[in-house]
Every structure is written in structure tokens, then in C-alpha cells.
Length: 209
Image (cartoon, rainbow, N blue to C red; front, side, top):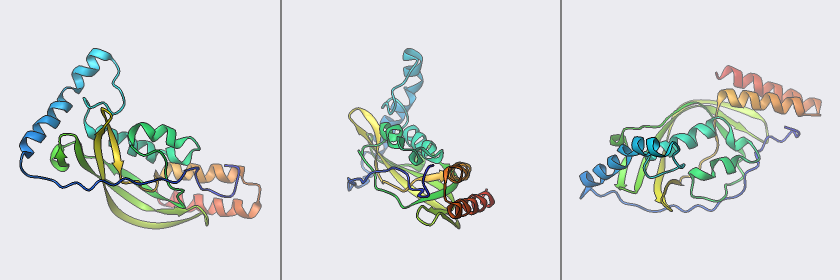
């Protein structure tokens, strides 16, 4: 990091939030179809040796898990971060975030009984984050806040692939990655006062481990 400003390079986004209603009628049929798609995943891999990202032959939970893990590892802290995450989402750009959420872990349920199945190509998967706090980019200060946060990721079949269509949330970065990020920023900071601020940030993040 070559500037005292910690903000990642993320562009503005236009949200497209569909308004869907879960229906009981036909629910059993929908579940069978979804499970049928998931069950074919092993055969597809065996035949091709490679499965396209977001393939409808894979579980929709897999696309969410990949997105969440990449975000946790700090993909959106990098200049080209959106390019890494683009294969998993259905938006073209993101807002300029002024903060990140610092997390200990994230849990993505693979059991379809924990999902909300709207139809066989339209599913909501709840992800549970164990939050430790947040970091404001302008002040470079860590604000501790231990809590559990649930984000309901809306996954749909888009152009023959699973894609997350909403919500667009702030970066949810793992504690170890944020510690490294603060240390790297301090190493590249020319201003002594700012180096002190970043060193204090690193120290407070280490305590959150």
C-alpha cells in the first residue's frame, strides 16, 4: 500500500433486487429438481475433469461458498479484486466502500433444507458471519463488535450458470488478512504519523484474533 488511504479500488454499483415470493405449491417438486442438479455434479466432473464456474450441475451453495471465501481472503482489497469475483455475481461494478467488516469465520449451509427455494432456478442461501468488528478506511481505526450476522444471498440461474444477484454487501475480510493488510500499508507509508496510526490498527486487529 503506497498511500495512507486504505480504501480499496471498488467502483459504484447499480443494484437490481428482484422481489420474489416463496410458494408452497410445488415445493416438493422444486426440491427434487434442485437435488437432481446437485446429484449430477460428480458425474459431470468425472467426464470433463473440469467444471465451469457456476455450472448448473453444481450445488448453488458452491458459488456462494467460493464468493465468501475469496472475499474473506481479501479479494476486494486488491485493485483487480472485482475481476476475481465477477464469475460469481450478476453485477458489473460495486460501490466505493468506506469500511470493511472484519470476520472470524463464515458458514455456508450445504443442506437444502436450510435454504429458501423459490423455484428450481431461484434460491436464497443464508450465510452466517461471525463478526469481530469493522475498519473505517478514512480513520484507519478498528471498531470491535462481536456479533453474528446473517446475509441471505439470492442465487439465480443467469445465462445457464448460477450467479449471486443480491445483496451487494461491504467486504467481509478475515482477521488474518486484515492484520497483513495493515502491516503492508504501514511498510509503504512515508508519513511517520500515519505509520503510527497503521501500527496501532495492526495491534488492535491482532487482539481480535
